[in-house]
Length: 136
Ligand SMILES: [Zn+2]
Image (cartoon, rainbow, N blue to C red; front, side, top):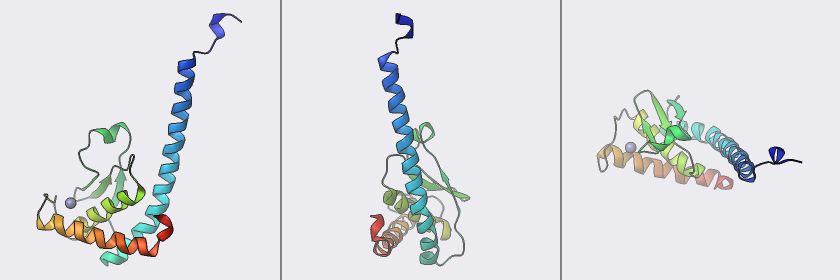
C-alpha cells in the first residue's frame, strides 16, 4: 500500500477521543436527567408550589464564558452542568428555584436573598439525600 492510504495516527486518536467524550457527555446527560426527574417534584413539595420555572441547560462552548453555575432571569432558570457532579447541579437548581419562587431578583453575595437561597438549598439537599441515598 502506498502512503496515500495510510491513516494519520494523530487524527485517528483524535477521533477516538471525540467519540469517548461524546459518550461521556451522553452518559452525563442521561444521569443528570434521571436525577432531575426525581429532584424537581421533590423541590415542588419542599417549596410548597405547584410549578417551577423552566430549566435551560447551557453546555460546551456556550457555557465557557459564563461566570456562574446557574441563574434566575425572571423567566427561566439556566444551569451550566459541564464537569460538575449531578448533586452540585441540583444544589444550584434548588438555590435558583428559591430565588424564583420567592420573587427575588439577582441575589448579591451576602444579601438576605442570597443567604436565604443558600440556606434553603442546603436544607433541600440534605432532605433529598436522605430520601435518595443511592444517588449520592
Ligand atoms: Zn443566588
